[in-house]
Image (cartoon, rainbow, N blue to C red; front, side, top):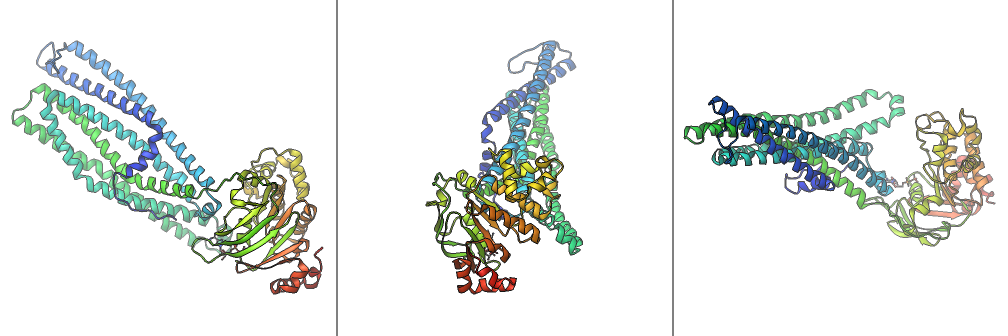
Length: 594
Ligand code: ADP
């Protein structure tokens, strides 16, 4: 997992916030304008209201002139009424603008993440800890929209505060500045609390990811968990990580919640003391003191909301940082797209290919070989010798660390991915079906696949009879992950999926290793039918699969120690001889290389 970093609460944090909201500059500007005008209207209303009350109390028909303007009581009330109606309209449209902004941020962040992930190379996707993408899409994106909400609230609060203070200064500059100074001192007094929130939140983001990873991992252990009766252990483990995550979240929430009461206490105290001191010293008349007091008290709620927002930023920025960092990681290792289109895929040549997983000893070393059109190649070797790695390189999912792979004479890295994926197919050891119909599972979201093409692929994959026996044939809805099919049927369905695009090259990773003899026989029949038409590379676990192979490759410790016809291999390769002997197939197979 990418480590959750602790960074200082510096202005560069704003980079992440800016990245998040910069596409919505227009909406934000509009929102700022709306907030400012709304607050000016509200401030005007409060000034008029105070003036009216003071005039009425003194039995006067007109207000004490404000900013050189003298208004009759009725006129003042009318203007105040209009001001609050306009304030209402502006407030409602502001709410609409900020909700839309937050919804857009959520959708766009999810889009950015899924795009980054799906376009990343297979190496990056495969190395992702389980559950992390879900966690990023879920709570991390929620945090991003939370930040956007905080930003809109912050803008509203800051501009409203500005409008109120401006009005206050216009009415009584000294009074207002006195209160403002007290507020600024308060803001700085609370800085350590904000730093603490941020620190706690970094921890909370980390435990959130750990929790998600653990849950995803345990969820994948279903059968083993039951078989070995280990539920209690996992229950306890989930408890531990869940408690840890909840505890971290609780601390953040507590610290965030403490900001407001502490601030309110200090701020009200400061206003009372400030205004009291000025009155004692004989500054200001009753109407101005009343108006400034109302304005300042209302300002306090905006200042308070600014403070809450600053706490929310402090707690969200670590999440945004993580999002950006992980996304940059995806983007830095995007799958190459290439634009080369050779005449055909095969021959495929490996030219002194080396491959290492990061920082580990080479999984493949100095592999040079050629696969010719129409061949069936078997690949064998001890577990961990590099067979699957070779298959992934052959599929163009990973790039060689050194050397090159040429397909149809072109470097695989330069070949257009779309072109390639239409001509090269794969059957995994454990096929993944998704919740959908049989037809959708065979088509696998590719265009231009006719029903006829699907039937023909299913027939060649020896699964057509099984499909037709289902209640709605190709339109039968498979249970979650195709759970209603047997292992053999799932595997043959995945072969139909691989064949339906009419591939030139088919790579199979131990396609029969988990199947019974009958299912294996059906798959071998398919391979017989495809012989000569499709080039096949089959990683074989069972020696009987090799009966069909024109040539067999032996990989041991990342090196190709033999690659020739079965009979020649029988003469020259000890691993092959031993494997045949273990399978009880010795003499039978060694002569069958026709
Ligand atoms: P095989 O298919 O023959 O069992 P693999 O190609 O899966 O062998 O693995 C070859 C070597 O590479 C092994 O040492 C294995 O541990 C290592 N390896 C395989 N996949 C990864 C991976 N994703 N990250 C790091 N090492 C890996």
